[in-house]
Length: 168
Image 1 (tube, rainbow, N blue to C red):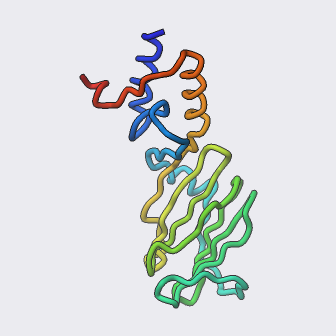
Image 2 (spheres, rainbow, N blue to C red):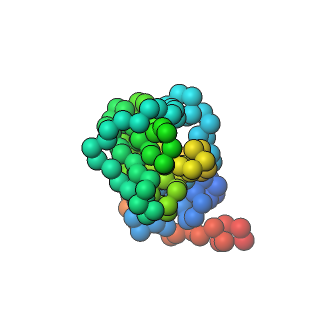
Image 3 (cartoon, rainbow, N blue to C red):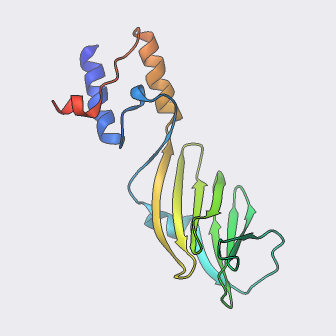
């Protein structure tokens, strides 16, 4: 049993940027390498469209740019106005839901989309440059957290092995 736990900690230390799930106090999301390029053609479509009337607008801190989110699942669209003769339309196909769309500052726009119950993508869109400047996939790690917790309970508890201890 000790060998199994040790191997589990070594592999967990490679997968998680912080401590492995047996050291967590609660479930969390974990971000992974950028795979947005794969999603671009398949699930995220960014186009420019003729301005249209939008009922609900959320303004950026500059009080001029705004966005409007339409839909939730299985499709959703963010419409973004940045004082140009068009809107930017960011359309998401085959999603579990857009959990968050918000302004970071006057020109940066954050979107968090879930492709299913576990996999999602966070991205930041520069509305002035009209391009994605950051994207990263994430995983909801509640299953890993509860599996580690259940395994520890079955074995009478587990000692949290921190990464620096693994390197010794």
